[in-house]
Image 1 (cartoon, rainbow, N blue to C red):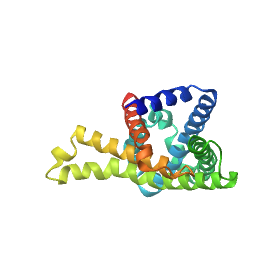
Image 2: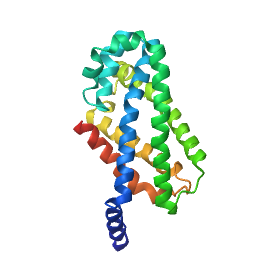
Image 3: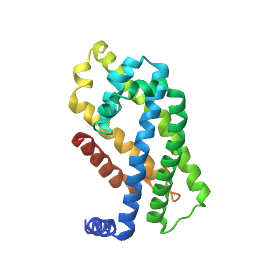
Image 4: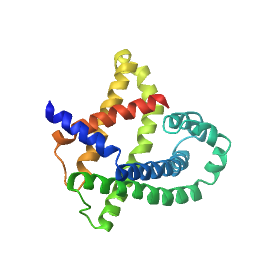
Length: 218
């Protein structure tokens, strides 16, 4: 117990250090800068595969949990985005590659500094790893949104045990477990040191809970 208290005290102390504040500000800036091109890219690609009316009525509504008010922001410009989806896709992809790779590169350097006390990879490897994470997250973002907006309502009408599986508390629990898993994978494989699962479980669980709280507050 005393060991855990010491760890939490040290963590709180480091959280308010100058380096931690600068790193947090940089990560927040590039995370926010990455959201808009990601949303534009999702809208442009979704309009190729699905009915534009579905994109406008369902997909954009689901994106409100990421950035509140995005549906009102894109509402008047959505038709123009769909019409110019080819150029929008190219521009948004380039912006996302730059901002997203910078975000994950900074995060990888920060995690390496935490576990090793210094940057242990060459700069090109940080950038390459960051591009890999950006590409992977971009590839799963659209299918997850599609499942949430089309497949899930369909299953609600077909499954006999829908009252249990789609109960708000069960859905919240599944979302929480998924968030914890994602943060755990991020903390496990992004740093060069490769910490053990038992070393990062507290951070993954805390980040998962905080992320779910932030989603509810938005």
